[in-house]
View 1 (tube, one colour):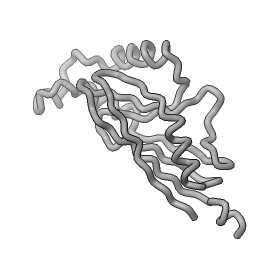
View 2 (cartoon, one colour):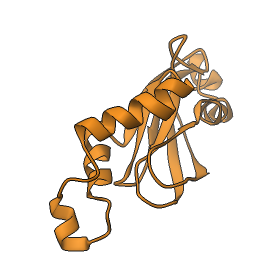
View 3 (spheres, rainbow, N blue to C red):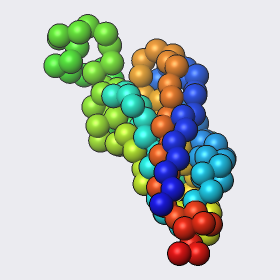
View 4 (cartoon, one colour):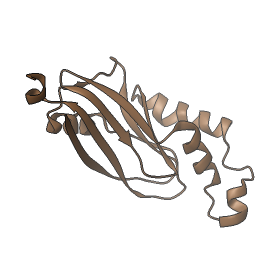
Length: 147
């Protein structure tokens, strides 16, 4: 059994921002040597999310931000605001609904993503942030396969 962990540093801007991290996750999987297993991609943040979808400008720059605004608007009152007055209650709620992690099967040393799927980090906060995405790999490597 092989375990491997790396972090992916990111610098973000305020508001909804999508960052394609597929290649960086693939590099971590390759560095792990795992042939068959699982990759967990996790953001240790309460105002960002990890999703998979097609990384296409219309979707990532328009559709997803617009849908989030329709479903979880920034301008309504949030209990978080009454306590902290930091303007990001909507960011916390959006992150809760989208989720902080994604688990990917690793098959033959590669993430088993569909043709149009990429791994996407979504910044949801109201100010720029330094983020680190944790990628944890668990599975069988070449030496394990011969057992």
